[in-house]
Image (cartoon, rainbow, N blue to C red; front, top):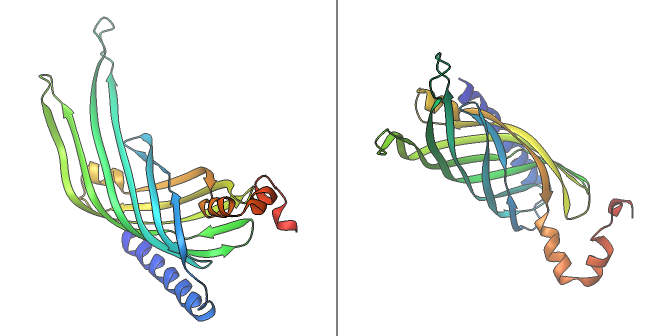
Length: 224
């Protein structure tokens, strides 16, 4: 039910924004778009980071293209025995989650300083988990090559300079795996925060020397 509700909301909002885009902004030209996309999730009670990048095209109303994200981590669990003279034991599990996705980022609000987005991803990729037994042999916990996923979130960007700012957001990630503990762990709320580079400005800096001198370190660029 949670998955269907999130999918319905995402499709509804995306459709509404897309309709507005084609109705009011038919002359907006699409330009190349690329950005780093970093997320943080709590998986197996660990705060883990998804590393990724997005490439595509966009304008002032919508962006779309291909994304790639990866999570690769080892988790170590320590076990303290009741006998204080017994050595501490531990086990270590390794797991990875990589997926390629189609994305669309409707832009809900945009002005020279602020940007509010509704990123939506539909992806597919492998999930693997394994550990080493006492003899050193690899033992698989799970290995699935084609696991579909659906991600919807909301994200805000704030420009300090034209090319540099901060970003924050949150969302929900749905991995269509199974009802096991492993499958449930990846169906998780995630959040993101940090610095953001606006790569479209770097091209302008390279091409236009006067533009670079004027805006490279200008805080009040919107007050002109």
